[in-house]
Length: 250
Ligand code: OAD
Image (cartoon, rainbow, N blue to C red; front, side, top):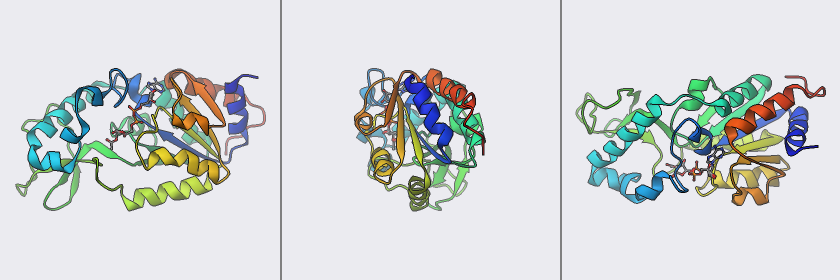
């Protein structure tokens, strides 16, 4: 039996599925990851761009970086990995996707039971009023963009040194408690608190399946680690699940 078959067998018995994704799921859509050889943080210092202090100091540079990323992401399409996760949402009544990605590709693939725990880079927030809205222009007509009230708009994403939304953390906690299986895809497990979610699920009795091109700190606690591109492995896994006679979609 292959590891994919073992993972599909587990998914066949699963009643409540949690999926967590990181930048790796979008790599095959042409979006650079954060770490690694071509990672975004190789060329930029996180604290120069993705912190509230950096924005206060130099909003123009921070927005130039986001405008550049929005340009890449705006041309990208969801890949087979995103589409397979959308299929998983359809197959399970009890399903949640937690993504660390701010690119919006899971939403474009059709996922709705989803928490974008680090925010979304198409959404902006008024620095004065705290109101949020979608800003889809690529490239932005003027940098930095401003609210109608005249105050600066910022990307509605979580920056280093900022707290995650208590609402999103509550949803994540309930999902970790309720799930019997977690699939964790394409994350280096370097950024907390999401990096701790796989071990939390494991300690609460859940089964952890990791999908990544290489071993990560999560691999040592995963029940099954599937190495390869998520755009290949996830569709294979869904196919194996669908052909599992013991599985009846809920
Ligand atoms: P990283 O860039 O840290 O890690 C990407 C992971 O994806 C690595 O483990 C790669 O091995 C893996 N990977 C690359 N290509 C893959 C593929 N085709 N299939 C499967 N896996 C692949 O990205 P994250 O773990 O998502 O936060 O980073 C977490 C957070 O750090 C981000 O959300 C962002 C960043 O700073 C904020 O901006 C708040």
